[in-house]
Length: 129
Image (cartoon, rainbow, N blue to C red):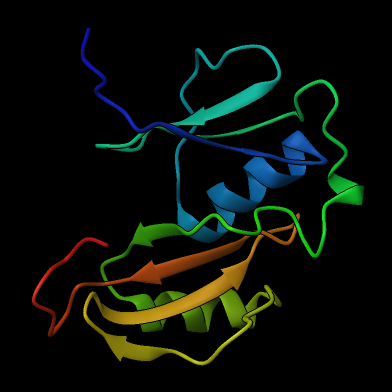
């Protein structure tokens, strides 16, 4: 048996609000055949989805915020331009952009408080975390 993952799904409070946010702000496209209780996006090589919380998960009780301990990175053609567009749309930006080993890097918070890092690979020795 071989593992070919990872695949990634974030548990969210409001499925439609979160899915719309990822579509609007990152340009992700929904897969029309998403499973019940989830929205799957057409991303490669890693599948990405937002989903309703699993039984027993209380996102409001998550401390200090949902996703603590998970580092979710998304590659963009121009991380700084995306950060500027997110900021202009009043999307929370928890830190200023920096140049790092994966290029220009910035972060934003999704509607549930998950911090997503964006990088563009420019001037980097590697283009993926």
